[in-house]
Amino acid sequence: MSTPQIDYAAVFHALPGMVALLTPDLVYADANEDFLRLAGRSREQLLGRYIFDVFPENPHEPAAAGMRETQASMQRVVSTGERDTMALLRYDIEDSQRPGQWVEHFWSPVNAPVLDPDGRVVLIVHRVEEVTELIRARSGAGNDSGRARVLEAELYTRSRELQQVNERLRRAHAREREVALALQAAMLPAPTPVGHHRAAVRYRPAVGTLNVCGDWYDLVDLPGDRIAVAVGDVVGHGLEAAGVMGQLRSALSAAARVADGPARALEALGLYARHVDGAESTTVVKTYIDWDTHTLTYSSAGHPPPALLHPDGTVTFLDQATDPPLGARPEHVPRPEASTPFAEGATLVLYSDGLIERRDEDIDTGLARLADSLVRHGRAQPETLADALLADLLPTSGNTDDTVLVIIRL
Image (cartoon, rainbow, N blue to C red; front, side, top):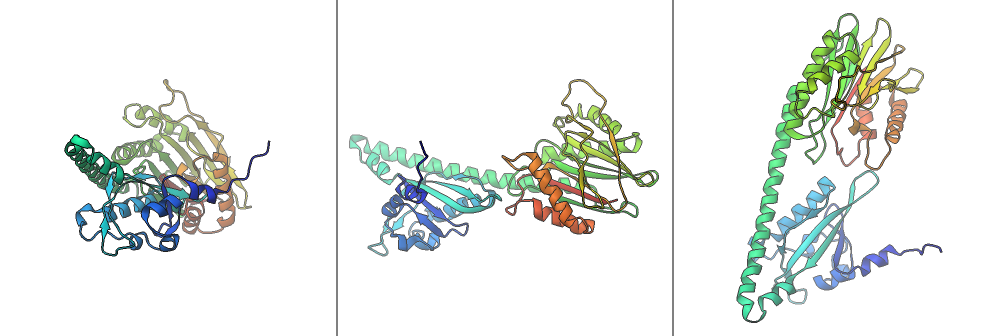
């Protein structure tokens, strides 16, 4: 039996309940029949117009604040790409037949994003349940009408208080994010020259979320023409993750100066991490670069593999010494280590998973995307290459996870 063709436009217009589609600029793109009927507006009065030009706020009831809260909710959807459920809202509507006459309305709105393949918000689904008649019916119900009205007023008041509490929480979270980012910036090393070699580093915090401050990088000068490079990712976010990150980065930086290779450095870090709350499941990759022998020696604790762009334009992923993240084993086990030669002019790229991973996508797809971008831009200098990779690989709407990128011209 064949699957019937579905006219989704017809389905949308027939949906029960009030549903409208708006652009990220809050301009009406469409509305279903129930929305038009219950809002008392024609399609021509809505489509292509700014929402608050169609439905301005009642000038006689400024305390209701319906316009401000509706606008804030929709802007949150656009900035975060996440659904926003509003509290019970009073938003009066001007009578289309009697200008200047306002009709009291109570609504229960939900705003949800429609995303394109790159994760950008292209439409806002504005679903509204009108509860005006329910409130009126309850307030006029027999001998209990007075009590019912009190209960409705109490419900409305509590919903407004809940909305205000949510807004205070959002501001508190934003402040925590600012503090955590400042702490992260203070603890990450400033980009410095690595001898006569060219390098570039980038840190991009997640946009619009608290999922920041778990990613880090480190570059350490070693005796001879050698350096050690690391990129790590702490599970968690905010101030706690920033604190754990600082402890682990400092410990690994010290270990790299005395260990005889990246595997031994990660073993020392793993033993230290057992005594740091929040350090479990941290991923990190450590690479020693030796220009005297033209050799890369590396070890990974559950981290995405570094990429090596060869002068001939081919890309190799350093994935021959991968072990579980820190704290994944109950007992200490020696970590693997591998070495590979490199030619002068090659490029080494270390990064965190925010650069390549996407929800509902296999990691191999992200690695292939990185390799393709490296091949296309690989002749660029490290600073230019870093910007090109971020432009190619991060969603245009903003990365939803921390991203660290370190590029070294070998």
